[in-house]
Length: 83
Image 1 (cartoon, rainbow, N blue to C red):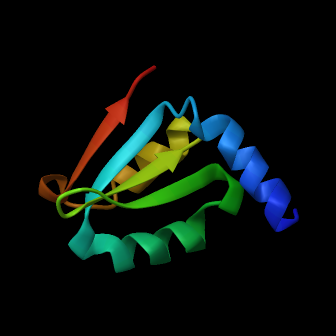
Image 2: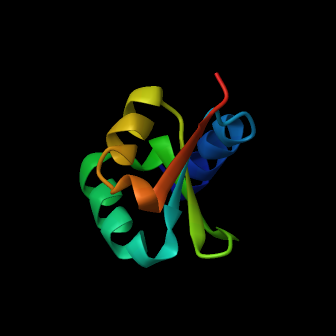
């Protein structure tokens, strides 16, 4: 998949993204390593500092979002499932 294809694909599902995981920014390094090792590039997106000390991780699939969520201590993460 070319970079432009990846960008356009993510743009389509991100606009209606139903699965968002909020992670404390101190855990960004761990989150990046985990996500790059376990998930396909086109299935997730990271937004830095969406709130104070918080990064948002958007997922296309419910299963992926839950797997990611369960890797972190509950006091450092929260989730938003719209569907």
